[in-house]
Length: 487
Ligand code: NAP
Image (cartoon, rainbow, N blue to C red; front, side):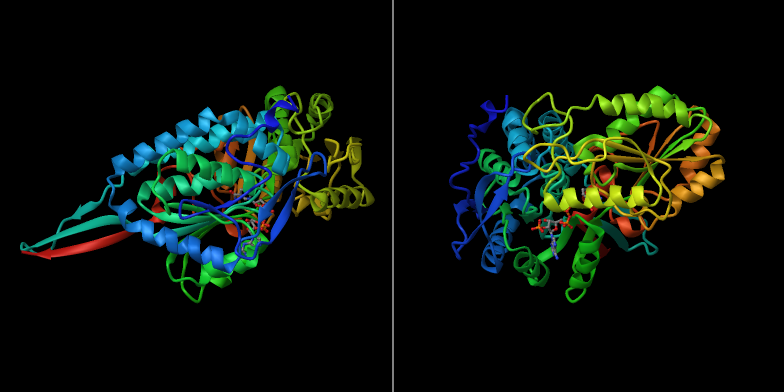
């Protein structure tokens, strides 16, 4: 398995190019940056380093393509999107392997991400056909009032490395369906998935310039995106820290901005929960993508009367997780994305232990060439530990206990973030009461993996604003125009 998937047809690792105006190009500066496989520490490819010039070319190409693309019927755009979805599914293994070598996602999970990413294309192909306007009753007999919806224009998508394809299609799906064209700036750790996707855009026959991909000098590209008046909307998924700087950057031109940022999810297990189900859920939520997800369980609160029993079930499951090279399809925990990510996890675990956390399992880097860390369980964590307030972004499950519902709701909400929260209970009254009291945009009620294309996803407070997915996810790519007709 590890060997076979290196033969790619969508990209040539020896000769990576950017995708601008339907052409495969190098950077004018001729400079490149190295992409490191986090499973091995080896260089995977040299990526052309796009700068301000390439960003500008990409924006202008999208602008040129916009009128024709916007003029197509929603049905024609849907056909393109469905073709692109089919192509993604035809190339699922290759796309998964590419993702796996560039950012370390375990292969089987990467296959799941490709399918999930493709579902945004089919959902928005359909949703584009339902961009309805309005007629409004007039207050004068000679007037007729209407609202029509039109694409905002050229958009930019800035995406993170932890879900390289899904975060891109969650933005491009609605944008293209609405009639927008755009530029994607993928994370420097995951440009290959985006460029392989661009090959499929080409194969689907999507007109030149509708989709452009520029990776490289982050600041130069993003300055151009924020300063160029052609760009009408920017959708960003990434850290809260960067998100805040982008709010400032968007002010001079009042760019429409949506922000899908970090989180710190509480995972609450009540005494009446199905503990086996809760343990399976906690395992999936915490260790998916080696703990590098914005919605992963960051703080596991277990009712004190069932904590010992839960720990027994949970730790057995954690022990069974296989760590290793992400391309091995039997592996469940791949490496962390890079050395910095590994160091952060080590620092959080050391800080927790110094402050009194009890190590139940794991707790060390894994003995391989890449950036691996053992799946880890910590008990007796307390609020003064970094792990309880900052995103650890690693395979570490911190446990603590509680006694009363109001107490755990208070603790769960005591965070600047507001992205996802989980609760496990079989008591319907409690389920409703607690769900309504949690200040988070996504609630997993006896469900550890709530994200789907047809539902709105997004956060509150420092987790950002805007929603992606669902019928809500296309709104930001549309302007509403009010027309008053006097007869
Ligand atoms: P990040 O460092 O904020 O980077 C995200 C994207 O922004 C990358 O393309 C990055 O480019 C770019 N970027 C970095 N600095 C920038 C700047 N000053 N101006 C403009 N763009 C800039 O985040 P990450 O480490 O890739 O992703 C992990 C974070 O994303 C976590 O906090 C996670 O919780 C969050 N996330 C949120 C969601 C959600 O839906 N809410 C989903 C997934 C991830 P370079 O790679 O070139 O630096």
